[in-house]
Amino acid sequence: MKKSITFLLFQFLFHCSVFSQDITYARNVIDTLTSSFFNGRGVVNEGEKKAANYLANEYQKLGLKQFDATYFQTFTYPINTFLGELSVSFEETKLIAGKDYLVDAKSGSLAGTFKLVWYNKDNVPSKKELKKLAHINFFSNKFIVIDDEGVEKGNELFELLKINVFGAAGIIKLENKKLTQGLSSTYHDFAILRIKRESIHRDYLSITVEINQKLESKYQSQNVIGYVEGTEFSDSFIVVSAHYDHLGAMGNDVFFPGANDNASGVAMLLNLAYHYTHKDPPKKTVVFIAFGAEEAGILGSKFFVEHPTFSLTKINFVMNLDLLGTGDDGVMIVNGAILPQQFEMLEKINAENNYVTAIKKRGKAANSDHYWFTEKGVPAFFMYTMGGITAYHDVDDVAKTLPLTKFEDCFRLIRDFLDEL
Image (cartoon, rainbow, N blue to C red; front, side):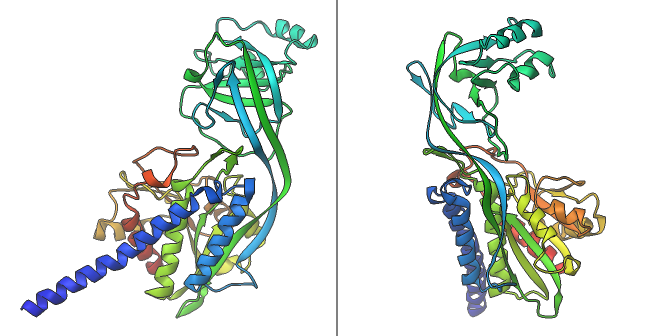
């Protein structure tokens, strides 16, 4: 009896240690990808390329096979970037990038000191008066501060101010909510700043800025592709995907770490790759695709489906992974509403094992890399976790505060689902 208890205890501890190694690996991947070396995994300082090389090395360590001579599938796209020095100050008050303000993704370059012109719901002139001022170049050496609090949504004058039809050197949009960033493939010939309302005061008369912007017209990105050959049905493919890129850097001092979005999805992809290469070889071939340029408009996956490295007709299913660092409120399945058979399968697995608190479903949405597969008629899910921290597309999406609340259970749920397909 004593020997049996000892054996069972050993088995339990062995099981825990095996999976704790997986979560340790996940943490290591997230810590690595969110470090300053990768600079937000964007264009500036080739952070995206560094991340792609890191993934290729991990693929090689795990023993993933290549379809071609390399894991990389390269493509190019245009992207607006912000390099070098970045500075915004009002008289003696210097603002902190990422905390007090962001340079809008479509902003152009600008340097110098400029007077401020403030417009809110109580003092905006008529369109005719604004046109007269623009005609005499009144705004050409000024920043327009747009305070649209209390203004009816879609107000014509404020919309015209926001797109700077009156020729200001720059515009400032005041933000009440937290600052979130995006990317753009184009830029304007004026500066655009988004500033937290509490970081700017009505008595400020001038602004001093330095913004160094450059459009990379043909930036080379890459998808990172490897696979594990199936033991029984090697010609039937299951694709596991996750984008590895993020928003990159804004000047020398600020970058967007992207822990939840989407170092967490990449960590899950690599954990699944480890599982199928070292623990339980799959019956069907499992292809792992880490997509580039998702944040720029789901471009890596679009390029892949238009230039596939293998026939899309071989794909049984695509499981796209993004935002997997929380899970307090369960998971959402995009395309769950249009693929009822697969969704019911996922629900049944969860009901039997109680992995997550809830599995919710949505219809089609062009919000991640699954989308282009769906458009080609390839069945695909996009899974993301819900609840918990709200850091997203900002400087606060960091590794140390990412809880990975249901990461292990999501791993088990995805693994069981893929094995059932």
